[in-house]
Length: 163
Image 1 (cartoon, rainbow, N blue to C red):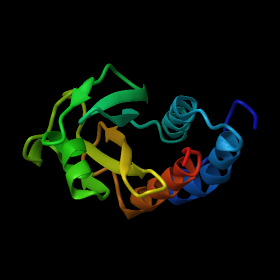
Image 2 (cartoon, rainbow, N blue to C red):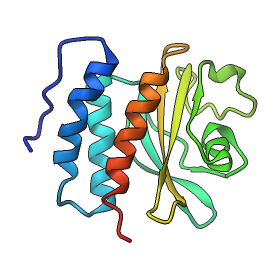
Image 3 (cartoon, helix red, strand yellow):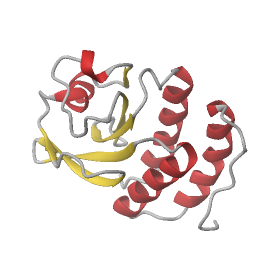
Image 4 (cartoon, rainbow, N blue to C red):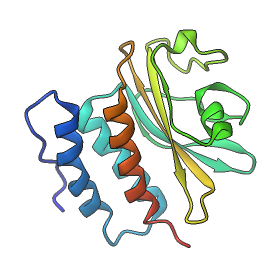
């Protein structure tokens, strides 16, 4: 895979996810290093959509610990009982938050973050090993299109995990 993405000149996110999927698949093919793959997926999503913040929180020693990301400095550690990421972990499902200020217990790593989507990344045994966290500086910026697109991309990432 080349070190650049080929994306449609469109604002239609469905088309962008469709173009991005095979490129991320090629990017991950044969690479089994977890951190490298997290970093490249975060970079690809940031480049493709220009989201305010894109990154991963890894499950590590009983909490969520910041992993590779693109965007402003972020919270380093999040407990399972705090914020959208903690809620996603506890609920074991993707969570879309149209207005982070209306979410009880939201952790404001940046006041510029207005909406958020968090997607679990699971081991082959089905346990959450990380979370993809995507923030937008616009209210209500994430839809079912994003949920499906991001979940599909996380399945590609999950396939690179060691058994």
